[in-house]
Length: 110
Length: 110
Image 1 (cartoon, chains in turn orange, purple):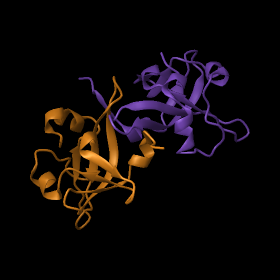
Image 2 (cartoon, chains in turn green, brown):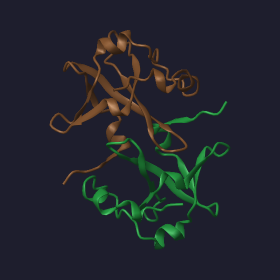
Image 3 (cartoon, one colour):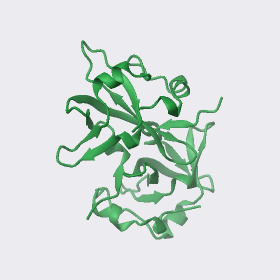
Image 4 (spheres, chains in turn brown, green):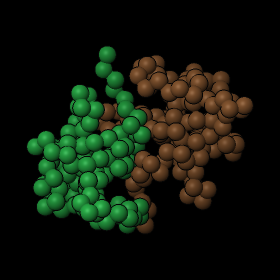
């Protein structure tokens, strides 16, 4: 029996590993399209060196759940994210402006 | 400027009013389709008389956000939910079996 559904509060805080096996961070939250109820992207929060976290938007389809590790695997590496086009800077998540700054084309996609 | 995205952890715990204006409860969590990343339904947790809560699955499209009240309005009433086909019984949310028991046809839909 394969469960086809997953709860939003189970996805939040789940660990995400990169394509190369290193830990990217955890899923902080999902951003949903209000109208059609689809996940636009997941916000990955990195570990935080010296208390400084980074946040990156990653497309849902780029995440694959690994039931053995009870964690997600992403089709990117931490270097991909760091050198990529999209980052939520700092610890304060700006609910309004940040979503405006990240059109779909800037997500990490597969 | 209309924001088209909403964060999963903002939807969780939001109050839901019924079609007749009475409070249905709060959104406890969203259940997502793993593969395509769409919201299958929201789990509405009712207020709980004598500490007893009820949980009902309601389709995302049946919920409309009211920015004035910062709450959701559902296209159903509490009586609709109580007499309807679908309830998660009790306080213990069974992650596995419950999702299997609730095919799409049994959601509250609009």
